[in-house]
Length: 355
Length: 251
Image (cartoon, chains in turn red, yellow):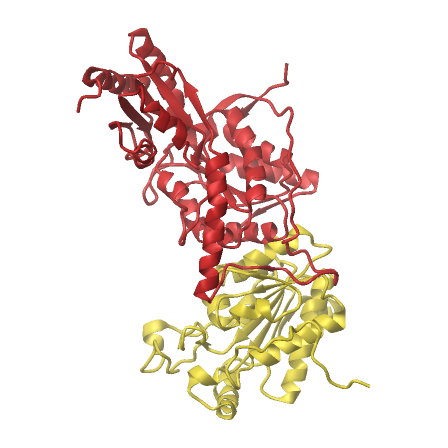
C-alpha cells in the first residue's frame, strides 16, 4: 500500500514538479493558485532550486523562457487573467520549440472576472492562447492525485515533443484536499543538445529563436511543427470512460465538472437511465476516437462544463455532428450541482435523441 | 605580428545595418571584450526586438532571441539557471529597453540581477522606420511626431541612467558614446567593466551607448554624428551614474 499524504491540489502540483526534477519556478501572485508559489518559496531554497517572484506574469513567463533555453525543467503558474498576460511568452516558447509546464488554476472571466472556479479558458488553452499557429498539450486533472500525476507527465511530454504544456485546473481543484501518493515517480532523460549553456568552445553556437524573416523558412518551421502535432494527436490523447458499456447518453466533462457529473450519472442509473461519461484527460489532443466510436450506441451527448459551451465545438468535430450535443453549464464561478446535471440527463433521456 | 583582426566572437557574416549606423562599432566592442576576457565559451547573449534583432547571427556565442522588451527577464532565467557557468548579456535598443520593456529593466536593476546590459540609445525606432522613441528629444521630428515631439502632448524623454541611479539595486550604470575614437575607447572600457562586474559577481551593470541613426534621422553619417554631439550629448550627458564598488572603496 502506497504512502499517502493529505494535500491541497495546488500543493500537490508544486511537490510533483519538484519530484519531476523542476528546480526553477517563476510566478506572480494571483488568486486562486498562490499556494503553488508559497510552496515553492519554502521548498526551492532548501533543495538548491530557484524560486523568484517576478514583477509581472509577462516577466515570469520570460524567465521561464530563459531557463528552458538552457535545457532545464522549469514552470510557472497563474490564474486566468495572468495566463492572458503570459500568452505572448507562450507563443514565443511554441515558436522557439521550448518545453515548460504552465499551470492555469482557472477563475471566472472575462476581464478581471471573479476568483471562483471556472473552466472558461478552454478556448485559450486548446486553441493556443497567443498569436500564430501552434498548440499546447493541455492536461485536465480531476483529482488531487491527477494534479500530481499529470504535472509529472506534463514535464515528460514537454521534453519529449519540445513544446510548452499546460495543466488546466480550476479553483476547486487547486483548493480541495485529497490523499495523494508520490510513489513510483519516474522521469526520463531527453536530448537537450539544442540548449544554450555556453559553447565551452567545443561546438558551434546554438540559437534559440522564433524569428524567420524568409516566409519559405517560416512556413517550413510551421509545417514541421504540425507534423509533430500529428504524432501527438495519434499517440497522446488520454481519457477515461465511466459506465459507457451500454450507455445511450454520453456525458462529456473534465476537471471538477466530471466529478459532479459522475454523481449525477450514478443517480440517473438508479432511475434506469443508460448514461455514461467520457472524461477527456487531455483537452489537446482531444480524445476524438472514443467519442466517434460512441456515436454507434449513444443518441445524445451532454457537455457538462463551467463555460458557455466552449467544449461543444470539439465534441461536434469529434463526433462529426452525428448526434446532438446538449449543454449543461454554470459559469462565472458557479459550479453545476449533481441535480442540475441529473435534470439535463433526464431531459435527454425523455427526448431520446429526437430533435 | 597581427595588429588588427576581426574578434573571434563576431561571426564572419555581413551585418545588415545601414551605412553610418553605430551598431557595428558597438557589436565589435562587445565581441572584443568577450575575446579579451576569454569568456566566449560561457557567454549567452540575448537579442532584442528592433534593429539589432538579428544580433543572434552576429555573435559567435550561444544566443537567444527575446520577445520585445523582455530581454532582462529572459536573461534572468538564463543566469539563474547556472550562475557559476553562464555569462549573460542583453543587447537592447531604446524602444525595447525604455518603453515596452521598462518594467523588466527597472526590476532586473532593482534585483541587482548579475547580468550585463548594453543599451543602444539612438532616440528613435529604427527597425519600424523612424517612429518617436521614449528617448526622442523634445522637438525631434519623427514619423509619429511629424511636427516635432511636443512635450505638452506626449511628455519628455526618459533618461535611463539617471532614473536607474535612484535605485539601491544596480551595481554600475555608465553612459558612453561612440562618436569619436576617444569615446569609442571609453565605451570599450565601460563595456569591459560591465562584463568584469558580472564575472566578479557584483551584479547589474548597464552601459548606455548614445548612438546615431542616420537613415531615420534623415542625415548623412557625418551630419548624424554632428547632431548627436550638438543635440543628444547635452540632453544625455556622458559619465558614470552609479558604481557601487567604487563608492564603497571611496568611503
